[in-house]
Image (cartoon, rainbow, N blue to C red; front, side, top):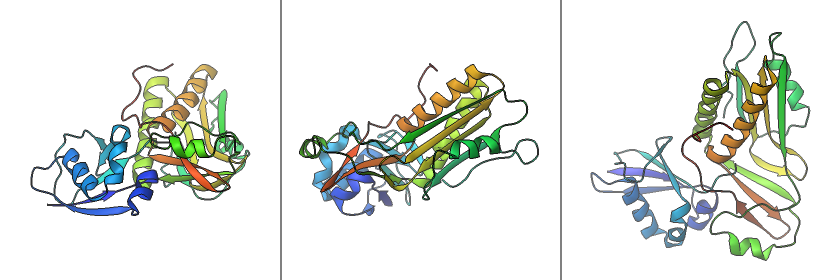
Length: 257
């Protein structure tokens, strides 16, 4: 059988390709697919402990069998799509979930609040994440490159995403916010591409009749997006870059905090 492997971020750079076609025996598992990939690109092998997998756009266990024509996405440590908003009552959207290539400013919080909030909402909580000058935690395998840039200022961030899977994950996170906190009007907007120093890279807005639920919803939205959405971040320096982030979490955290 034949499968298509998609590579992102540091894996894409190590392999020198975004996609790899593999021929595998019938009954091969995701782990078998990884082994075949590493046989072709040995530089990928040290990153195995930090890799998660997705089969046809959904997180999957390494022991899951593959089928002919499957897409296998290898998910390196994440940073943590298309507009998938839906209407609730007239023209007021229930959700605004987007990946945007175009820049936006701090005024996006007012834009999103105006689009989401209803007269029933007594609380609107917003969060902006911005590019900062100090570096973050390097992704596993990037420690040596991070050490090379120690003491230097970050000049910009580059974001890369598995767009269809990221859109689905944002939808899932919004579902969980509704179930856990009763907050149905939520926005998560994330940049892709280069984000200069000091500019926003993510905006979150939660609207609710009560402030406690809105605060919890906004915190959950940013925490889960960073932990689970297949979006990768590279810190750009004057003479190179470092991929940063943590090993992707493939399911919701057990308890809301």
